[in-house]
Length: 518
Image 1 (cartoon, rainbow, N blue to C red):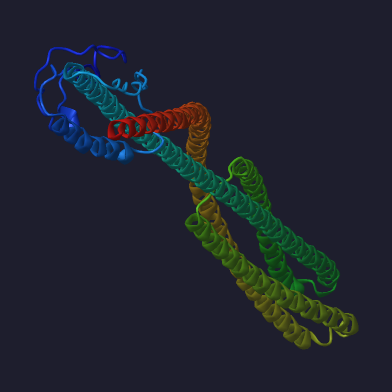
Image 2 (image 1 turned 30 degrees about the horizontal axis):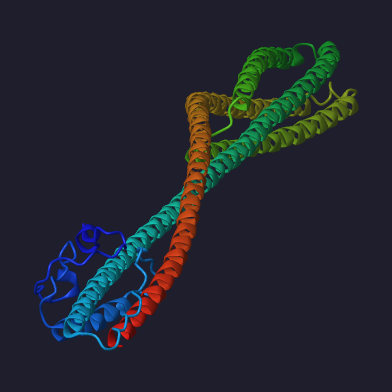
């Protein structure tokens, strides 16, 4: 619109002079009419030249104030008019008036031509301003593109940091799971060691029971040996009494009856003791086999499990310590029985010595029995007293042995009850351990599956985000480089065109002003 308003419609061709008249005085270059006004020939030339002389510096100041290096629209300006023809000499006043009118018309045409050049120069200044605004807009777009690229880079950096943080969280979670698994393995190893220790303790208890049974068997064998010795001693004494019975007759009959009754009681006692001991031995062997089978079954059951709690292990260790104390009590009681048996052996030896002494005395006094009935009666009384004392000692020893056997049976029952309770607790713990193992296996499988799924999903997301960010960065980088090249090319071209246009306009204006002044 500015170009249509300011530029003349002659496209650079000088317009013909119109009718004479006084043209309006232009105020500024921007307020020129849309079409050039050709004065009809009237008016003062000096006022017109004064107007033109005041307008030209304004246009030149506008051209000089324009941004250097910006393009301006090129216009087709007409060449400067030729020099004014000199009137011939010796002319009439009419010819001089005609020449003056022609000069005036030519001056007015020149003024209009200068006005057109000034309008073209104003249009070039407006175009330079428009191109300047376009360049500023392009610079603003370039800055916006730079900001967008920086924002994308910042987003990419944030995504990279988030990805690194997520990877760090995954690594920490993986390390935590590995530590938990390692702790579970360590606990399994500890529980296996504790199970092996319990197995060793159970085996030691079994060996202790076996040793105890062996000691009891040895004790029974010793008792049987002592009974056999007593039997042999009694048989020998019976034979001697039979020989003495033939010699002493009625005096020895009472003593023989007493001895037979004592021997019968001894035989019955020995038989009862043998029956009781054999029955108890069979029962003990059966109980031992049963206990051994139960312990073997419990050991096999314990071997199939891998975890226990420390509290239960402490309870088991307490129970094992109580069992060990019971074993120590049993060993002490066995030692007491062994000491009693040793005392009985010493008493048997003493009795054997006494019997030997009695036999030697009887052999020595056989020839004097008839003459020393009183002495024999005394000896018989002494023997009867010794036999009574021996019988009382034997009964006391038997009572001690029975009491100790009762105590031993009670201890065995108590140990069996403790073993049964221990087995029940072991089975309960085995059930708890098996259930916990199943839960841990399920939880470990779920965690492993979730970890793998999360890792694969995040790897895919990270790869996709990296690829999209790389493509976006490349696209914006290409756009920015293309826009930068375009801006540089347009700026250089505009700068060259504006420089050429300004130089051409300046040269023409200076030439026109020179001619007008001339």
